Image (tube, rainbow over the protein chains, first blue to last red):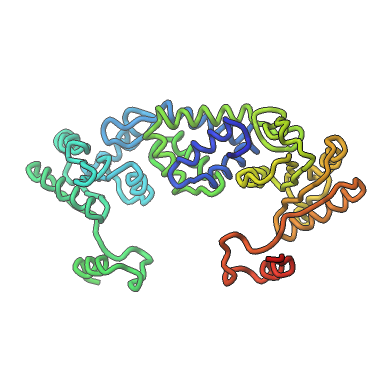
Length: 199
Length: 199
């Protein structure tokens, strides 16, 4: 009970269902929005309605934007013959923040998972195979998580692409920048040691 | 850079400014909303626009609701001759969740603060004095925080109401339910000892 009337309580309940929020943080946000209801709240509502109306998945790569082809796929400077395969849009955005990759992306929309009954046909793997030929791709970079599911998916894709003759690479595994050895798990240290490079 | 186009980035930036959220949590929320843009996101936007349009402060107590007089002030069953004074609406809602108080409220909209230059005229204290006479109030319960500013405000109100003859009380201070002595600060233990009760 928020004691503020039905609609305010409904809004708090709706906000509390968003990822990372709960009843307490939702109440705090809604109260702040109500304080600024003519400005911040009305703007946020309008912006949210507009994105709900206009957002769509890119027909080529699966990124979300406001057009059928996303700004990355539309940018001719990024047609470098390289496709970076990511699990979801959040990972694509994380790669973009790194500003290290100049090619295009392919969003899988998940990882293979026997437990969750997600098979190859549930991911956008057939579309990836099509793109290899159509876009004259030389290299596919698998930027998937270093988890069991991520690596299972990576192995599956590498096999699926074996016939196409494209070079398939994966992100290096090793010590993260700023990482202290003492705090790293054994698996990471082992991987970093195996992949050691000449200084 | 979220790589998702201008409007999506603007929405993420707007969400990231909400209390308790940052860029990472805002991105996560916006991505989830975009996934459910036809349902959850459109509903949330409409709800938020409606609350932004209709929310207002109660003319009597300062609670927020969708009417000029809030549901608590409008409820005749709550005209018990008791007013509970709280710092803000969040505290009013917290009191209501406890379901222990059956009277009406008065929201101050802040605490006295020399540092922030908040004087009595900035809070809703004159309105409180008016209500004492108009509503035939017997008891004013000061449910203010046990902080220096909260208690300064409480003392000021108690003095301002001294002439009205109304009974002024404050919340008990002591060991919180579930509280372990070992983890309590000295001030709380001292207050609980001084206010000890017969078992």
